[in-house]
Image 1 (cartoon, rainbow, N blue to C red):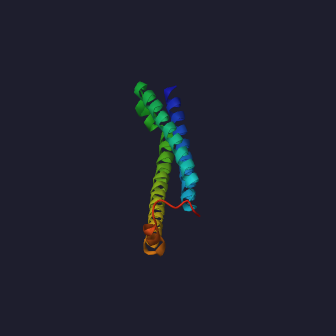
Image 2 (cartoon, helix red, strand yellow):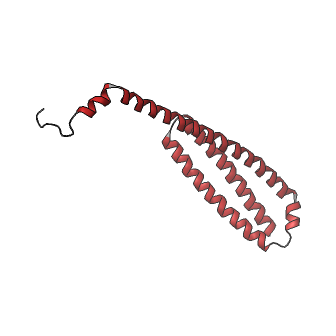
Image 3 (spheres, rainbow, N blue to C red):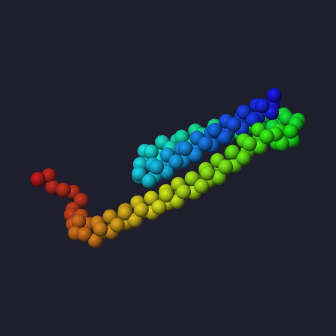
Length: 142
């Protein structure tokens, strides 16, 4: 009974990891399109999936603690298959996370350089000099 339950939880974990990978792909698309709303939405979805994974992990650990025949489970073909699939999915998740981090870093650098360019332009133009010479209180006469 517990072997079946642990395998079922592992399958749910694998599905959650695949869902996480899909969310990472959606996040990548949002980063590329500079969609802050999309990035926030995908980040929220990632948090939900991570909470689900934490819950599944704790449930799996509870069952494993009560199991007496762990070796039999670890040697079963069903468990080996799930572990292999999860390892493959985890490699894909790690790669996607690294790509998204690089894309985010590039995007942040792009935004920073754009802001620096704008600030530099304002500081070097007459616009910035005229602001310094104007009084803070404007006359009521227009």
